[in-house]
Amino acid sequence: MKYLYILLIAFVLFSCEKEQDLGKLNETIYVRNDGADMPVYMRGNMNSKVVVLIVHGGPGGNGLEYRDGFWTVDLEEKYAMAYWDQRGQGMSQGHYSKSDVTVAKMVEDMDAVIEVLKAKYGNDVGVFALGHSWGGTLTAKYMTTGNLQHNLKGWIESNGAHDNLKNYIEATKMFVNVANEQIALENNIDNWESILDWVTAIDTNNITYDQTVELNENAFEVEDWLLEDEVMQWGEAGGNETSMFHGPINPLTSFLIGSMTNGMLEEEVEATTLTNELYKITIPVLALWGKYDFVVPPTLGYDTYNNISSTTKKLVIFEKSGHSPMNNEWRKFTDEVMLFIDANK
Picture (cartoon, rainbow, N blue to C red):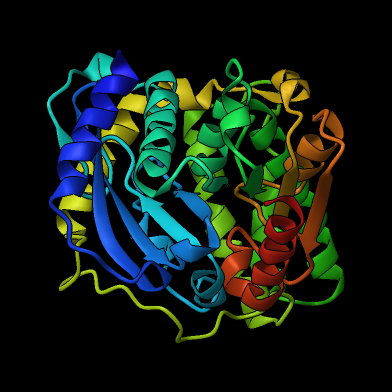
């Protein structure tokens, strides 16, 4: 009955739309599920009968921030891209209680989005979910919940935080290893020595909440040093651009509601550990990771690759990237996504 309700709403919304060129899709659809009204920004080529569902990071991000740059240009030429604002994030609205802001509820939301995409564009549409960072947490939970994974043609996990307990332990190890490596290369010696002093004082058997915050903050700080020393590759300006002031996203609204949702989910997300659930995954999987991702270390990429039961799987480590390889090495990132989709659509 829940999905029937969703589909009826979808029918009402879609029946009011005018005909358009599905090869140049540019529209916004809304999915209502259990009190949440969530926009899905559709861009690209629906004639392909392939949809890439972007499951954004955060919690507290938004879908269209992932459209910026070059990496989505060729993807939109070839497939349809669905940039979804999750419950309590981006420009989502609705009426629901704090108890409705859970990972499990967002798994239901994701399933509702997929159902509506197929209801509008046809049951023969193949959906690939691409989850980045927190989006990797959410998509991993979706993939390991019941038989939901079979609603997808494939899962693309990019730098996904599917196991936060392991995540922080691996991050401390990575800070030590890379700090020693960079000091030996005489790169930013004072900064790296300071990092080394800080991280070696962390008890990995009892990492505090304040230390997890510091780990995250320093993760982005050290990326700047690695960019300065050309260990990592700078992103390029251009490509698709989404105006945060004249487009569909109001940056202040997105920030405020995203921050509140982040706070509501914080305790549950911090305790999420899905490594022992990954064996349930059997559909095709592509794992994409930056070598210098201190936010979600590449160990978790190997974690995905080694634990899933999929016979079709691939892990790609981007040698000059950090937490967002779609920016640092956009050409290679896009190529890997297209190769995976074309082989499994």
